Image (tube, rainbow over all chains, first blue to last red; front, side, top):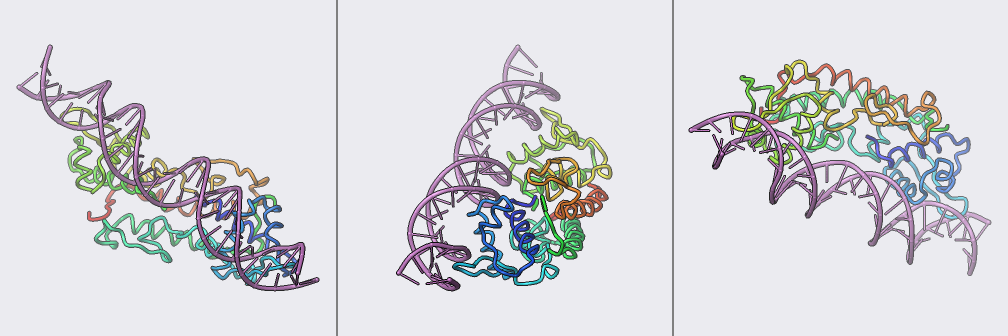
Length: 139
Length: 139
DNA sequence: AGGTTTTCTTATTATATTAATATACTATAA
DNA sequence: TTATAGTATATTAATATAATAAGAAAACCT
């Protein structure tokens, strides 16, 4: 299940992507418009900034703005930034791989093979969808 | 990510499915063989029993045994019993559906549509895989 | 009938994660 | 130099996960 953090992040990014102007947008504007706790949103946007997907400007006229075009931002990468691995098991994760402590051979583990399949089919969908024309909730 | 509960459950069921005889198997035998905390496994098997996938016998010669043939037990149904929804959002879950509180129209929500797609592709894989010849870890 | 085996029930504990809030600090534009 | 707005740190509350403990209930055996 996607956490609220991820969902909020997607909504906030989608909000930024929908901006006509490419001027910075206030955290409070996003938080009010998308009904997200402001403080919680602050930490989410910071995470996204550290991931390099958006930038910020301080002081009056400041705020957050996207660093790439919406069509160049995959949903899969956003989920990875906020939620972590997309795979259902650490031992099949591409970006957050961890070896099973109880598994001697991944090639012979049915669960590993199965979950790798699931991961691939999920990625195929999430990597082909971007922030372009992405709307969520009331939008 | 799948919880240990689900992983343990899959390993235990796989162990039962691999039995030649259809006689009850002791919890302690499974727990030792698969390296699972016995008490934790007890509660997992109990959950699976309540879900109707296996039955138990008390007293000497007792234990747990499958109620169906391994090839008739889908991995998807096991995950649902132990982990809950397979979908990444409550609003696209087939078995654990919950309406989004902030969403006025699911048909017009990109996230809903996207996650429904992911759910379908995941189910396509998990519903076609059963406990037959399913081995995990060292087996 | 009585004792043993084994599952079942209930409660408790520890740890981690998620979600949210509070306070103070730093950078920047006007 | 002041108001603005993001940044850092820390604390809290709620929930979920993982594991453990003690005893009750049922089935079996002699």
